[in-house]
Amino acid sequence: MIERILGCGLRVSAIGLGCMGMSEFYGPRDEEESLRTIARAIDLGVTLLDTADAYGLGANERLVAKAVRGKRDRVVLATKFGIVRRPDNPDERSINGRPEYVRSACDASLQRLGVDHIDLYYQHRVDTSVPIEETIGAMVELIAAGKVRFLGLSEASAENIRRAHAVHPIAALQNEWSLWSRDLEVNGQLDAARALGIGVVAYSPLGRGFLTGKITSPQELSSDDFRRTSPRFIGENFEQNLKLVRAVEAMANRKGCTPGQLALGWVLARGKDVVPIPGTKRVRYLEENAGAVSVAFDLADLDELEAVFPPGAASGARYADMSLVNR
Image 1 (cartoon, rainbow, N blue to C red):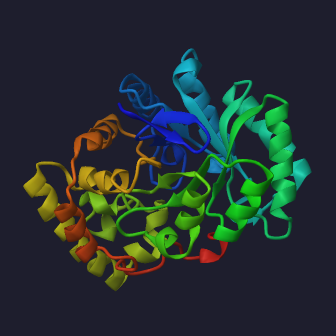
Image 2 (image 1 turned 120 degrees about the vertical axis):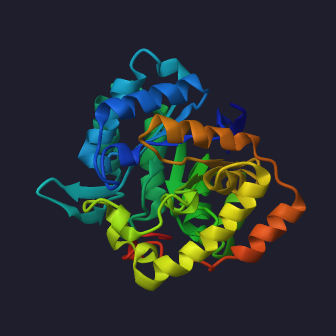
């Protein structure tokens, strides 16, 4: 696995592994298969493992802890704070960026992960009721205490990216970025990150699995899969988006790769400062995703995909509630 450098010197594999779906949101879970998937990722040279305290109400961090036990020196652990969920009502969410919360959340994540430091610590969503300078200031204290190595932001607005970076260098901006989610290219987030030398970590680079071509009907998804209520997977939106995926499939066939590898290859081709973190809980898909580093693009390929998937091409919003993104 080739490597890339995020921001101010954080070296990671060119493709990471998003672990969220191993604990929540994407249907049935199988802890043993998830542990095998993480182990296989590490064997393949995937170093960047992404989790958050909100995933599974802490369960995902505990799962990652099991997977990396005895292998800590081979991985870059990234986790997040800021989305607060109640155990008695997990669907209810609030945002907390107060300094005292930052400190307590970090300590709780360290305990669940079973480590003495977090390599990349993200503010999961910006708390608009707290000046971002105060939140970042508390995160800087964590660096001084040896609990965190690098700082990151997720779904932060261009203004907040600049304000945060003025307090302390930000290593990574984590945003949804794929052929069908290109908001950061047009709303100033990407420009701000690149002007400041901040790397981009692309979550959901496979369009929550849609771009793999493996989902041909919403009814194929389990009843507890959150995509059942995601705008892009519903009704006419689903049918229109499926037409776009057919073009990806045709191009992938010509290039001798899978549609998912083509979609990941497109993200990788956006720049050496970009690291996609496709999520999966199965070894076979992990191995397929890792193979995307071998997909080569020329300008004609990129132009062809741009014609099919310009910004805004996908039908439907990214989330049913967009109020918690681009803050």
